[in-house]
Figure 1 (cartoon, rainbow, N blue to C red):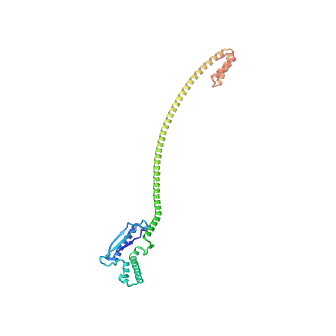
Figure 2 (cartoon, rainbow, N blue to C red):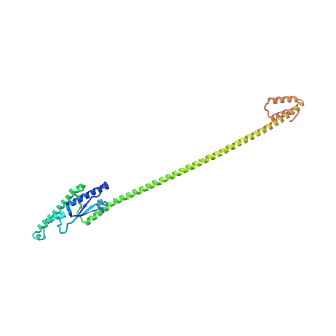
Figure 3 (cartoon, rainbow, N blue to C red):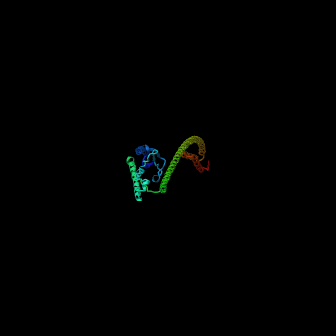
Length: 314
């Protein structure tokens, strides 16, 4: 006899560690219950953890156990509770001849009901002794009775319908990951650009500082050279001006002396002329009154006076 015992899929909000802890605790209790039910006839229990659910829980692992109970050769097979209950209603082929069709069908139907009651009682024992201790429900979704082909087609259809939103979700997650990657690349590019800009700015500032420093040094040299040239020009100008002034003074003194000698000679000559004493007296008075007369004006004035005296010209 083979029994299949299933464990529900992990809940979306449940931690994987807690889920596995509950599963193992259930497994230990289940083995104890099977030993109580079948005793030494329990031969083997296997756990399958490599088969996924189908339908609404498609993709999640469907943990389940296969339990096998075996009778020794020659022993009566009384392991299956449903078969055992129905066997009590069985009629041998020899006795069937003594029953009418209706009587036989009545006993046959009573056997079917006995089978159902025994199997219900079996699952009640499982629930009371084990299932409800681990949050399992006595009655599950109770799928509709369909042929295997119909059930397979339905499960494949449901899986396809569920796969589409999951695929969309997967695509959305991939797009999100890709966008995050692009965002990170953009941030790296931005950071690198910022670092490069900083280096360029730093280098430009350094170059500008060097240019400024060199310009200051050059300007200081130019100013120094200009000041030196200006000082040299100024000194030369002062020397030239002094030389010109000294020469002018010498020339002016020479001219003045010559003019004085000429005037004195003229005055002497005029004094010897008739009426000349009066002119000489006037000339001396004129020279005395004009403290800064120019030589030319004096000579002009003298000539004008001389023109009036016998037409004498200087």
